[in-house]
Image 1 (cartoon, rainbow, N blue to C red):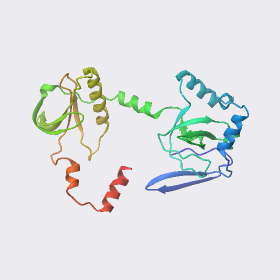
Image 2: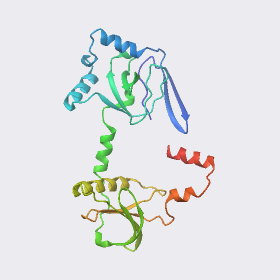
Image 3: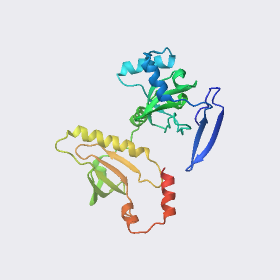
Image 4: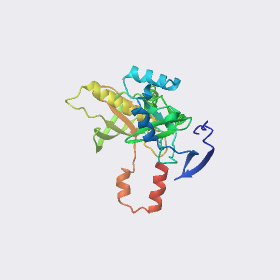
Length: 258
């Protein structure tokens, strides 16, 4: 759950539900023209990057070390309550321009930029830790089941895609779909190997009754492939194309995916 704001001016908290998802709203008792305020401070030769704030100093050290902009990641969704505020979506990258309350107009609020829009947002809704890097670290620890190629019995080709050919086959007497990696003649085989390894790790994360599961991966060159659950009913797109689906069912599916 998103954290509570600490400012005395943020006196109203509303919990609502929009499109089936909980939305956390905070109301500010004051409203400021953040863009003009930020520009005014900048034009008065006040370098917002030099304001002595522990948070800002830490952020500047990180930015200088990495040679990048001051980019933070949104931890929670936030719906803007005024024209001077930024709406946040979890995982979205925010360029932090200032953490000075004299610029934002409220304690606990920072000034930032998303795309071309400059505005203020609650500081405790963002983190300096990059969620994408965190996910990459988690994926790096995953080790899918490795299968040797001689354990596989390949039958007919049942599909062809950008990844390569897909065969019906058997592994340990289990009917499976074997997705063979396509080798680009202009690409080093080690690159193909790494791509197969990454895709296998991503598939290994997906554990759901309605998602085709990964049984294992073969990383033996040049026979690299993904060994997957066999969907005897055929392609889902092909099945759906032959049926007329009611709008309420489509909406229900969309809500589940969102």
